[in-house]
Length: 259
Image (cartoon, rainbow, N blue to C red; front, side, top):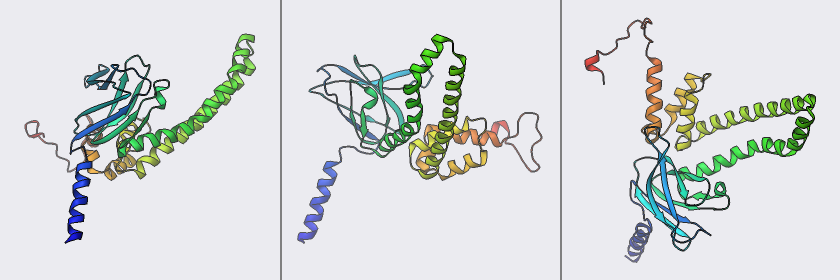
């Protein structure tokens, strides 16, 4: 009986600690060094393609802020801080999201708390490692390039441009492998559905690989807006083009019966 009471008590504690219900989110933020009363704006992509639109605003109080709301599916959003350059990108989704804003270097702001945001941070760190070689090359060779341009030394300019171009190609190839490898191994990550959507726009896309990747995704991701867009394109690609002969046995629905 005592064990049962302890188990029930533990269950009550767990339930009370969970602040977020299904389809809800809480953004618990810190804004160290940002004055009281400064506005923080939650933004998302305008569905009509008109840039970003604001969906909520809060005020900083004692270096903290909190935003609550409802969400139906994961999607990229931004936080814009009054008087601070740049925005903080993150994935708005069901759960408790923690964001620590770095006002001096907005891209160093910390995001955590939910699966997709943790994955977003880790994936970005991996990409930064791949791109480090390009950044290091630019830092090391910018003075030499400036000198060569002033002296109109085409030999040095061409040499540096060739080396940088080769480095870009290598980074691009490695990044492509990284994207593909991630999508293959993370079927429950929102990042994966975005990667597949991006692959769909590539002129050299492997259609069979794309179908396989999409099929492996968790059903919840297939039902997101990007997931539905991918499925629509896959279905359209299978339909014969105007003027083409349909395969034997293929019957297209009449216009009045199309679903």
